[in-house]
Amino acid sequence: MAYKIDSNKCIGCHTCMGVCPAMAIVDGEGGKCKIDKTKCMGCGTCAAVCPVNAIEPDLQ
Ligand code: SF4
Ligand code: SF4
Image (cartoon, rainbow, N blue to C red; front, side, top):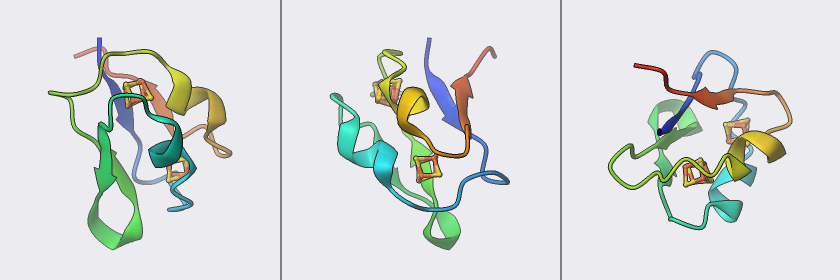
């Protein structure tokens, strides 16, 4: 399962990008981050470090 970033919550701190072991987090619009679902392996590390809880499992 991949994870996703809620762009309405993301504050663009880029903390998640630095901890992703799969290099799946990339720059998105407005200085925020987004997750490349084709690379995400669902480890949840990014969700654990996000200061505003903007990252959740993508259940779709
Ligand atoms: S869940 Fe893991 S692999 Fe997926 S984006 Fe977050 S840190 Fe990277
Ligand atoms: S750690 Fe959270 S707030 Fe910071 S860039 Fe990633 S998703 Fe956005």
